[in-house]
Structures are given as structure tokens and as C-alpha cells.
Length: 216
Figure 1 (cartoon, rainbow, N blue to C red):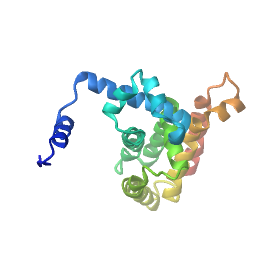
Figure 2: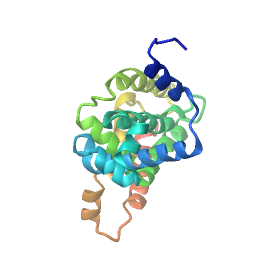
Figure 3: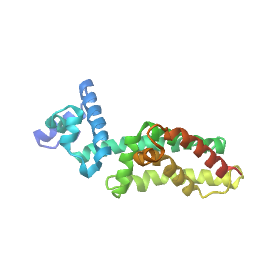
Figure 4: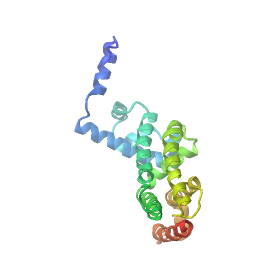
């Protein structure tokens, strides 16, 4: 490690290099879980460090020991979320059966909306704000992945294995038709009624819709 020539800076750097203890790992998880709850409910601008500290059951100084700012918490949370969000698309196998691969992707995305509604709303809020804390990642990592998978879908279409479709807009439509059930949960349940399970009907409808769309 480079010597900064400043004892305080060197001490801080040494602290950062140390592996986290079990308690420190637990507290970081508490903070990120609390931040997920607060950010998904209030958005980045509406959320405060005080709210996150209360939700985590920690004092604000204790929270600031782990993360120096609200921005730092949000960046850590969004970085982990993006990896989770992109995993089903990464798993699209060029050597697999095209319709099975694409229908599996639709079902995994819908399942994520059921199981991870807060994460979906947090991601949507970031997009609505212009993705100020994710713009570089979206322009690089996300674009490269989507372009690569779009090329796979284009090859499947050209080989007659699925219907001719615009691959980018197919991916966009899958995002829109699955994440809607998390991002607009209140609206969906208001229309269907409190006793309805939106995801049961959604699964059946999306299976029918995309099976027909993709059939060569």
C-alpha cells in the first residue's frame, strides 16, 4: 500500500483493508436492508439517513461508520441489485431451445417481481430520475449485455426457430410486462380486488402471449 505520508489517512486506509468481522457484516446487511425499505418507499430524494438508521435499528453515527453518506448506501445497494436484475438475462443460453429459453426468462422476471417488489420499485425510481447514479453502468454493462443477447435472439429468428421479432423491443416488452406487477402493484390490486392474486393470472396470460408471439 502506498504511503500517504499522513498518519490519519494511513490509519483509515488500514482500517478499510481489514476484513469485516461477523458483527460488521451483519450491520452492513441491516443497513442495506433498511435502505432498500426506505428508498423503495420514498425514493432517493425523499429518503434520509435518519430514516435508514431507525429502520436498521442503529444510531446515525454507527450507520456513518459503515457508509459515509446516503449516496454511498444507494450506490452499494444499486450495484448489488443490478447484478441480481441482470442474472436471468445473462442465463439466456444460445445453445438452448429458443422458445424454452425465452419463456424461462419471462417466468423468472415475473417471479422476481413477485418476490422482490421493493427492489423493482427502487430500480424504477432510479430510472425515473434519469439514472444519475447508474448512468455509466447502463451505458456500458447493461447495453453490452442486452446487445449480446439481442444478437442471440436475432440469430434464432434468422434460423426460423422463433418468429421474426425485433430483439431489443422483445426484451423491453418482457421488462415492461413483468415489472409492471411490482412497480404498479397498488394499481393492479385496486383493479383486480384485494382477494385476487395478480401473479397467478399474469403467469397464465404472459405464457399465452409470448408463446403465440414467438411461434415461428
